[in-house]
Amino acid sequence: MKKILLVLVVMTGMSLSASLNAQCVVKNVLVKVNSSTPSSTPGYCNLDFDFIFTIENNGGNKYIYMHAWMATDYPNYFGCPTPANNSKPPVAADLALSKINIGIHNEIHAGHPAPTLISTYYPDPSVVLTSAGSLVRSVFPTGDSARFTIKNVKITVPLACTDIIQMKADFWSSQAQAAQNAQCVFCNLDFTIDPRVSGLINCVIPHTFNVAITSVAPTSISGYYEVFLDNPSDPLNPATIGTYGAEDTVRVYTSPYATQVNGSSNLYTALNIPYPPYSGQKPDADRNLWIVVTTHQYNNKAINILSNTCGALGLKLTDFTAHVNSGIVQLQWNSEEETDMSGFIIERRSPKESSFREIGFVEAFSSMSNNQGDFTYSYTDRLNGENQVLMYRLKMIEKNGSFVYSDIRSIRAGNSGLSVFVYPNPNKGVFKIAVPANSGVFDVLINDNSGRLVKQILSVRNQADVSGVLPQGIYIVKIYFRETGDTIIEKVVVL
Image (cartoon, rainbow, N blue to C red):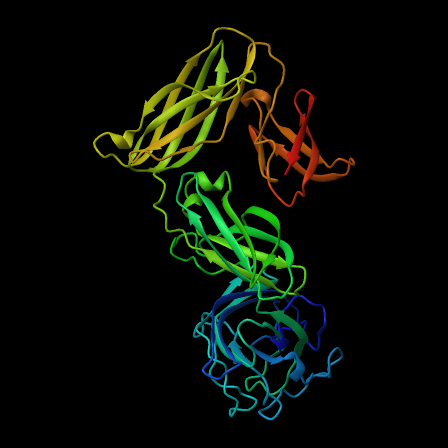
């Protein structure tokens, strides 16, 4: 039977916190396992992991310290859940069994422009602080909290790497220069070095991804995972990526998961998962992906990054529009950062047709004399006068033969009634609702099969993108057109 250890590191989402002179709240803990290898000492494991947590800002966080123990060794030094005001910080004797001791200098001024890891434990300089690679802080737009990432924390624990490694932690901060008083304490919190997350981005266009969630638990674990774009922390510097920060809020996919035990493995895998529209549009398709795993059996989350090693898409499509006047449909689109493109196949579909069909081709400017840059294109489709709803999309082809589809634009020709196009349907909880371009503003209300409103998207034109945690089931989608007062109801199946 596997042993279960608890090592304390002051940052998990439990509410066993204590506030003293200043508010001290730590939440949203994530663990990114970089490596776990057996130690030269039998029965021990060497761990290298990133530790990510969010702390609410206050004026007393000049110095921040974390201490972590195995749970069976946890001394509850601060006497949580009701620690005393201005407690004296622990010293070497109190930390004899701790596995993690990390200090952060969080004061920002002209001479110290960013938080740093510190090498001295000011309450007792004889305490050796834990080795870690670097520190990154990302302030949330609200300004009330910040996410810290401590990279490459290296520790050795008295368990095999095949055992569940759980830890308990204390977190305290001080505004005093010598950090001799714990003015803010958050303690008795758990985090777990499990599961491990891995995967890759498939370089087909549009891109897909694979994900694997592996646990060392003896029984199945379950929960859900979310996928986010890895956006630059500095919008003006595309190289500022690779750290899960406050800017990484664009969720492109989510799904429940449950591992399956098969012999010595305890694994969940999902292959070739699409994430439209991001997987086929620039710059989103060129981004890395963060996989964030929530496990019902643990208090913290697991995380890993899927590095995007695919070649960059040859353009960024902007302002794709469709307008109809007197039986003539005018399509227009702009491309930015275009390079090495062959051209654009224009495809059209009516609700009576089962698929799109090609109706024309426009050569890309970047295919002519190796032009590169931003370009404007147009295409005219002359209709036969029949009242109908038509849908258009672009098949954008690169010189190497790879291609990606644009979003769909719909028009209403003649005196045809309002119509919408929901795709894909069935789906995995991510779908689009396209309406004719001249339909004006519309609202989307999504109800589950019991009639409960589960999602709404307001003030939309042309197309609504639906994503989020929609469990499997049948949903009733109501599309309300503000200008005409019309309502169209569609049934959507989430698999």
